[in-house]
Image 1 (cartoon, rainbow, N blue to C red):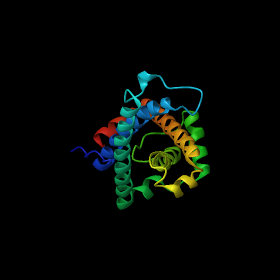
Image 2: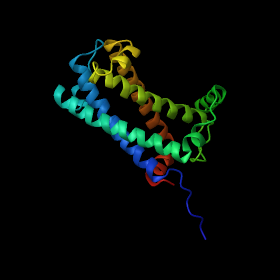
Image 3: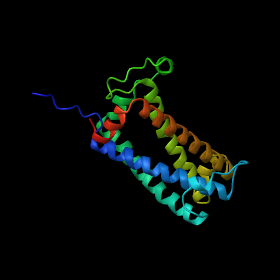
Image 4: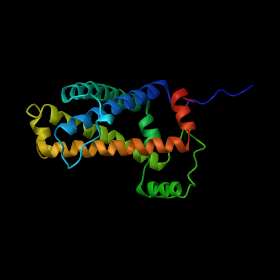
Length: 198
């Protein structure tokens, strides 16, 4: 008799993961179109990789995805906390463990036999992206409703500073996604596990 496959990712985790992926894709591509309307730096994003067609359309896509990201992110955090998964999967975590696993990964010696266990680099990256998403939402609230969130605006150093925080948090999110996709390409079983759960 064959043993039933171990569930690595519960259904709620898989659903929130894929909804977050969709929300981030929409937010980044519409955000690039919004950025192009009033660039912070001396470059613009190619129109072919932006979403919304024009500034008003991009803003509508951006806000729709923002609500999806915020609601789905809260659900993800609630389920992680309620099931104790956040403590089991992401902790303990130490700088020494992160450096050791990072060096092992760079040498191609980091094992991926047990997909139910996150190494220290994964733990740090996933915790980072949770914090980064929170920074994106909070700085985005300042850009959207600056007058309604004066304390938050001041904590971020003012409106223009909030724009920079939002931009760099977006850049960090894009970098995370690029590394995440590269790791999935190197260990394709992780994609199957995130689709099937086992």
